[in-house]
Amino acid sequence: MLTIKDLKVNYGGIEAVKGISFDVAEGSIVTLIGANGAGKSTTLRAIAGLVKPAAGSIQFDGTELLGLDTPAIVSRGITLVPEGRRVFPDMTVIENIKIGAYLRKDSLDADIEWVYSLFPRLKERSWQLAGTLSGGEQQMLAVARALMSHPKLLMMDEPSLGLAPLIVQDIFHIIKEINKKGVTILLIEQNANMALRIADQGYVLETGRISLSGTGRELLEDESVKAAYPGKKKK
Image (cartoon, rainbow, N blue to C red; front, top):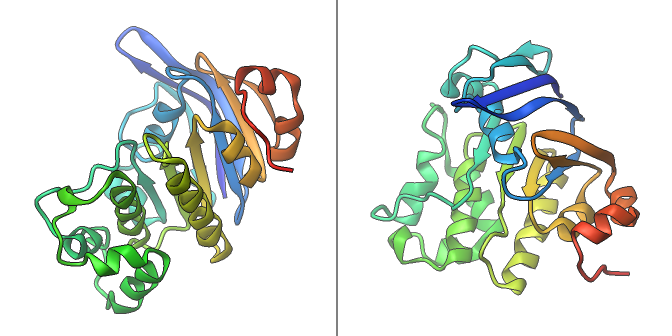
């Protein structure tokens, strides 16, 4: 579905992404893991059209995305859930959700009910201001908003960041449920153990380069990954 070839992205005189290549198969969950500054978020922002690559190719369903603006990329079926949630705090939950469908002209009712079925707490808080929600609820709202654009590929940037462990488990469960509905997932996570447990494929980024790749299970068992990302693994 998504093919990245020799992607390079510069910030000023700094090469943040140094010629990476990877694929995302349709229907899969793919995760990019790595330390802060490895180039993970920059990669997602380049795919979403938020930063301009210096070189390389980004193809989605056989179409080159380089040169397209973000609305055009969203219209082709790619949506980004940004790091830090970025909900509109002075708007209600339902208003935030509807903003995710700004390119659509059809009825939203069925999709609103679907996201409410994924996130019952949002339904309870439909008319509450988004800025008054907890961090976990704001993350749920950011995901719900993204789903309203009918994405084929949902990109998520650190969805578990700053959340309590029980909420993290809820978020990862919902990611799997979204994937079961046919939505392909490209996930960035510092919680490498959780991400690799649900991922079909994983890539390790270090200082703008892919240093390691494999299935989620392969990377979970890799000694260098265990050393870099210690954590208790479920049996």
